[in-house]
Image (cartoon, rainbow, N blue to C red; front, top):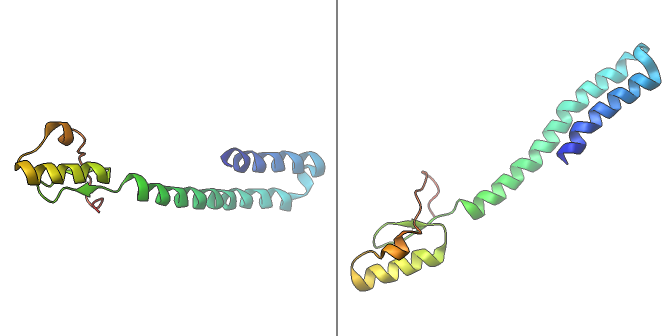
Length: 106
């Protein structure tokens, strides 16, 4: 999609100049206006994809016992079970914990 949006204005500019020459200035300005419109269209789709990916990749699960955070819910549950049963942390489980940025906790 990005290649199409980048090449289309170039092809149109070259085509209009080849067909009509420099005499038809309105065609050139229409192509210039097409570039920002193509960029807006391209970025709108990119932003939607980022929001979908953030929902999957950026969600963290917290062990309520020790407070460690995990990307996968299974590891958080395993950590919670271990912490409740042993009143300590398991290094094999804790190595899957992640450092988190503010606002990512679920």
